[in-house]
Length: 182
Ligand code: PRP
Ligand code: MN
Ligand code: MG
Image 1 (spheres, helix red, strand yellow):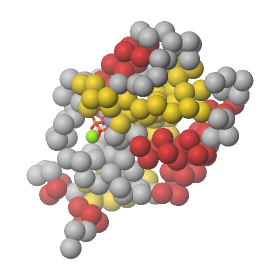
Image 2 (cartoon, helix red, strand yellow):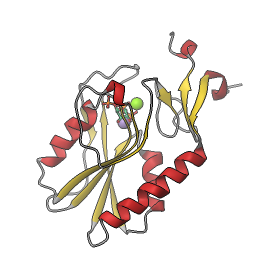
Image 3 (cartoon, protein in one colour):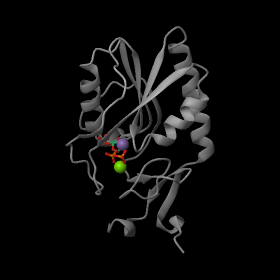
Image 4 (cartoon, helix red, strand yellow):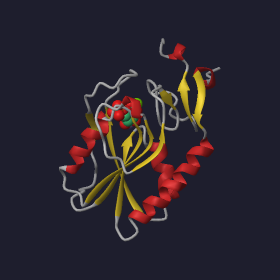
């Protein structure tokens, strides 16, 4: 049988811990945008789960848009080359925009995205990420809201993939070395 469990080394962050953290982040985001119209932008595909759960944890009414970029392809290393696979449907000029990400690894994807979206003259542009790997950072990024700082290991689940697999795990786990030939 196809058992994703045997490919995992350990559970790093449980579903319950993710849920609690998103409620905590949502309260802060609600406070920040209390008197503003907020557009949240999810970065496909990894941010699907965090967008869906964060949006439902917010009290603030939001509009949602999506951008698809990819820098990883099928490997475990960031290439640093960011491709737009799908652009926003919305003109963000003058809008309050919050980018929602699943993870900041090297930071290359987000640093590129911040300058790309920033050039479209939003009223404000902030970032919320569920995960961040401080030891992997190649560029410094100013991130408003971070769920968890995690060690520099390859993680999957809750939107995060390895070769497009494991995104539907409800928790974040580390991958067993045999899966990626380590
Ligand atoms: C992953 C992840 C982030 C980015 C982080 O996306 O979802 O978007 O990499 O890496 P970085 O900080 O080193 O740039 P990926 O390119 O794998 O596309 P995906 O979301 O479709 O999986
Ligand atoms: Mn991504
Ligand atoms: Mg990926």
